[in-house]
Image (cartoon, rainbow, N blue to C red; front, side):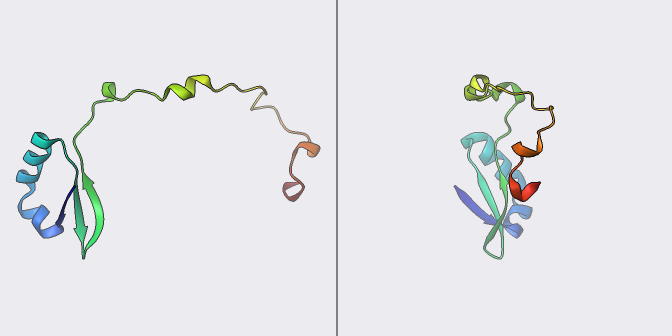
Length: 77
């Protein structure tokens, strides 16, 4: 992972974009030695897949039904 300071990023922005296109790598932009932003390759929405674990979640209660006072933790009653 390459890091550049703000001035380098500003003056060489086109070159940084070309590098990201070619290498598909991440570039971190730093101000005073601290990371403030990442330049990363673009991902289209179709390349993102949902986590398969989300399909396995089962809810065994009605989430919009109000809870009784006994169901609330004592500190929240």
